[in-house]
Amino acid sequence: MIRYRVFRWVSEEGKWAAITSLGGRTLFLGFYGFAACVGPDCPGIRGDCLYAAGRRLGEWHEYSLADGTCDVRYAEYPGAPPLNNNSPVRPPVWVFPSLC
Image (cartoon, rainbow, N blue to C red; front, side, top):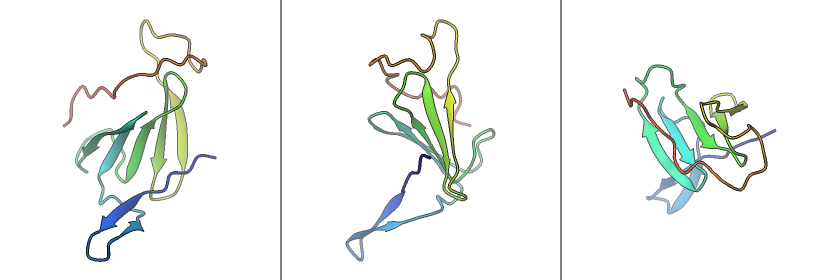
């Protein structure tokens, strides 16, 4: 089971606090860090979720902060290498055809 822990910086207290809501927003993480934050009014995107590139080629995770579920999915596209192989090659970025 995959679980992500999400925190926000509370500057007044000088520490990090765990959160279970992004206010309806969605975070996208590349394999090496932050990629984008999308507002709650984007169709087809689940709010209060984190989408993260997985460790294997074509793998990505959809983690819900609301209920703690994490779905592991695999991207399929023309010309893609075989899914779920152990290639060290990683997709460099998320591609957003439309950000609403």
